[in-house]
Length: 266
Image (cartoon, rainbow, N blue to C red; front, side, top):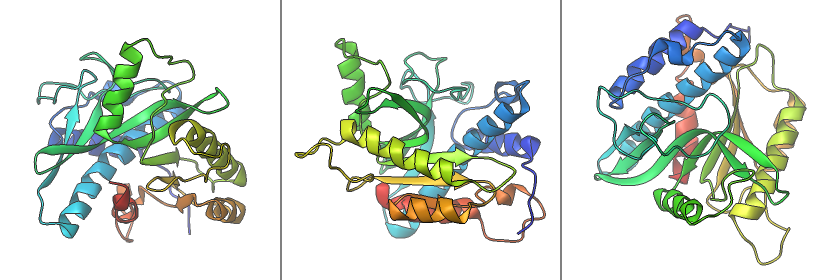
C-alpha cells in the first residue's frame, strides 16, 4: 500500500472538532511545535485519543441499551465547560492536579464514570525505571487510589503504580514500524505489570494480565518481524490508524476497528 504523509493541519482541525463535542476547546498553538517530528507525534497522539474515545462510545452503544457518553475533564478532575481549554501532555508526566494542568477524557455509562483516557502518563516498572504509555485507559477507582497514595506521601519517582486496563503505543512514522518497537512494547508492558498487577509468583506474570490490553498503533504499517514478535506476546498491532484523515482514503474508518477490538477492556 502506498505511503501517505500525515496531514498535521487536518489532524488539528479534527482534534478541535472532537474536543468541542467533548465540552472543551483546543487552541491551535497548543499542538504546534518548532520541531516538526515532535509536532507530528503529539498531533497524532491527540487525534487518536479523542477519536478513539468517540469511537468507543459509538461501539458501546451498539452493544448495550445503556446510555454512554464522553466528556473532557480538567486536570483538577472538574468536568470541562465550553470556555475551558483541553490541555494535553506534551511530554511524559504524572496525573494533573490543577485547572490548567493536562486533563483527560471520562467515559460514562448511565451518567456514571466507568473509565478515563489519559495521554503520555508515566508508569514505574518493577525495575524502578519509568515508562510512558501514549494512551492509557484507567478505572476511576484506580486513579482515585493512586491520587490518595501520592497525597499520603507515596513515591512518584519513575511514575505511577496503578494498573492500566488498556495501553496504546503510538507511532506516526513515514515508514513501517520495525521490530525494535515491538521489543520495547513487550518489555515495557512486562516491567510495568510486575508493579501494577501483583502476582503470587513474581516475576512470572504474563505481559498482558487478565482484563488488560496492550497494542501498537501506527499511521503506516508494521514490519513482519514487529507483527510476529508482538503477536507472540499478545501485543496487538493496528496499522494505518488515522488514514481517514486523508480525503483520498477510500477504506474503512480505521479508528472504529481499533475501538471494536478494545471495547472489552472497558
